Structures are given as C-alpha cells and as structure tokens.
Image (tube, rainbow, N blue to C red; front, side, top):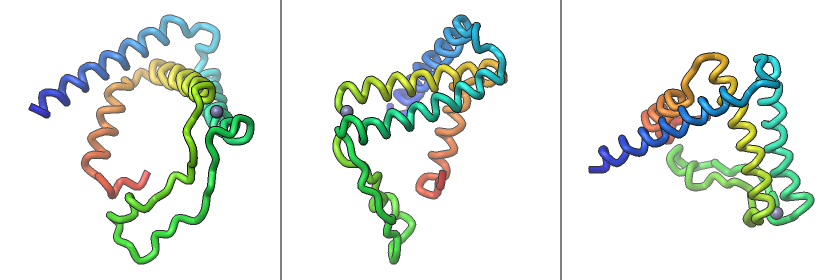
Length: 141
Ligand SMILES: [Zn+2]
C-alpha cells in the first residue's frame, strides 16, 4: 500500500519538475547563455543566504546562536539527534515570502542549467533520494 502511494508521489513530482523545466525553457531568453545561467545561479545562491542573514540582522524574527557541535563520546547514530541547527525563532510571513522568492529564482536558474545541459531534474532528485535512502545516516553531505 505504501509502495503504491510512494510511486504516485514520485509521478506527481516528475510532472512538477518536467513542467517546471518546460516552463523555464519557454521564458528564458535574456540569460540563455550557459555563462549567464551559472553566474545567475551563483547570484541567487548568495541572495538566499543574504535573505536569511537579513531575517536575523534586519527583522530579528530568527536568530543564530552557534557553537561547536559536541559529538564527543557518542555513537554515529546519536549524532543525528544531537546535531543542532543553531537557529532560534521562526520566520515571519514577510521574511518567509522573501526567502521563498529567492529560492524560487534559484530553482529557475537550476532548471535553466539542467535544460542547457540536457539533464532531467526529476531523475536527479530520484537518484539522490535513492542514494540517501541507501546511505541513510551514513550520508555525510
Ligand atoms: Zn522576519
């Protein structure tokens, strides 16, 4: 039963990714060069980080309280439950909108790069999902 549900979810995600890649290919005109695409991808990667930083420093809806992760004298399996994000608070609606917009733009250029290189985003997600499932907690990425 669960297997059938998972297969259905994958088909839906395939469709979303394929539609998204198709849509991006139709509207990407101005930055069609692979050089424009990879530099725009870098730009939006920075803009996502900048939006997170601004949520901390300008808005204050989230804060970062970072310190060394203490993984001494614990098993590898215990690391996952002890690892901290160092993030406190929750994104306000405004910051969430900004971050979602920047991530969306990042995804646009990721889809554009995938189109240019003739790779399928849904296949990449499926392969990565399989790799994560296989490696489980031993996935160190
Ligand atoms: Zn905020």
